[in-house]
Image 1 (cartoon, rainbow, N blue to C red):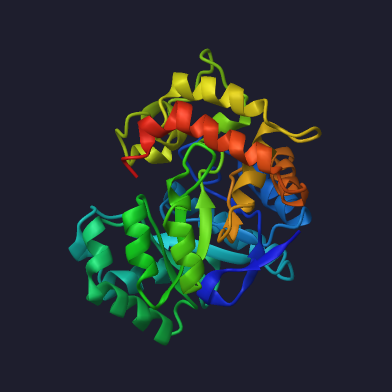
Image 2 (tube, rainbow, N blue to C red):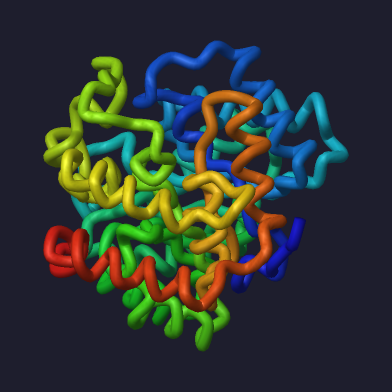
Length: 327
């Protein structure tokens, strides 16, 4: 699989990584052996990049990855984690004392002495303008607790603020065929600054897989049940902020754009990988089969100019009015 340098980390990661929110919580229960099998399948398919967070299953996702790293120490995995969502979301909580405590916990969960990359986990907007926050992050690097730091953002404005900080290694942002706004300013700014782009929610919480219908029932502990309107966290994290019924219609139209031999999900992932400035896309997986299918998208040939134009047209007609002004 193609490897790209992840911004200012200087490290190479696979263009298709693995998001591990599913292995922690909020997507229904996943047994430990099943979770480890997903990690194994992804690595065997060429994935070298795992994305996790200290809040996924209150550390369970990190602990599972830590166990996997011990079992396959030569796999060469780059692990990005996140911090900040285990406390009430107030800017004053983003301080050096908490950062040290949070990174100590993630180090213990992952079983490592130095964290490859730590991302602020969609912090309050005021955090991006705080010199003290970024000074504290620089201190973590100087203390060799972390090798690099980054930010996971909700909005394009937050992304641009993070990119302007000289120590920011990468920015994680929602990007998929139903979320095109980052293409306008964020990706060009990141490329110019040498900042990596990690694309999350690439399948719009599964909408772009084409597997769901109006009759689909999601478990009560699945965020696609309880967060459709932003009841628990930012609405954009669930179905990319697209209203479910209209999203199903748009997804059916998107499925018709898939090239021969590619699924709708693989087409969406290939679209993300193809955007200039993207380093890696991080779909989640609940089974080894999903992990292998997602990784295979990294080997697909580039989508045609006609397909790219059709994606833009679909977004403009069906999605833009719902989401473009919000994020």
